[in-house]
Length: 113
Figure (tube, rainbow, N blue to C red):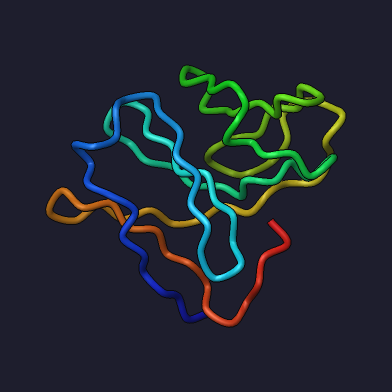
């Protein structure tokens, strides 16, 4: 699948354990920095369509929580770790090159996330 690379910022601009929402090509994505690692998942809770970027981040567990109903999602797999959500959210590739952070977005596929 073809992807488009989107510059989302400089690594130095992301404080550790921060969350940033990115909207691009019909995709709503949460980009998260934990220590020196970056993760990206769909921003909409699969249970009730609320923004995950507004929820709590659990860096030790590599999870983010939906603020509305409490479901947590793995930043690695996108799978829900707690109910009421039962469907995963999409996971995106993050690339860090020369201090710049890029998000790889599938071209031609509009996400429902």
